[in-house]
Image (cartoon, rainbow, N blue to C red; front, side):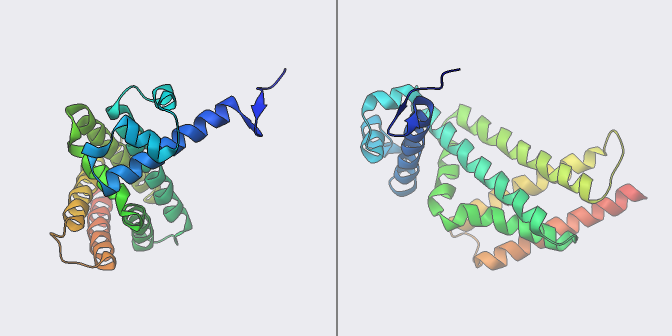
Length: 212
């Protein structure tokens, strides 16, 4: 089978991926430093160094750009969380601390990413729904990791697991946003430690309750 024709050492699909990545990088910079009102087609293409036709090759509107950027950050966040969990010792607090540290660092090492999450969570009804679904996905991840860590083998896990996972993730999102806006006077390390305390407390308590 003949492969795709290459230009400059890259296939057409690779070049399209590179252009999409450049546009999302420009979107991150605009949203993170100037705000959503400055997120225009011309600004995106100027920031990415691309012709406007490449914008329309990838996106059909501003919401599509926001969704794609939000999803990319969520994927980076999930990857960091799982890597933190896998690298941590087999101990409740160590694993919770590693995962929370990894996640908070993704959103605070580059503050533009946290600003994107804030923008998307309030921009439109559709994007608010996307935020809700993403929080649910992370709650499911927390629940699954807890079930695995505590060796819960029931075919139908206790509904309290899902409830507490949702409570923890939703609470962390709101707390992190408040912290980023300066409403919680803590250092980042203090925030990580306090969040870890809550996750461990509710996780251990639930594990004991289920095992009774």
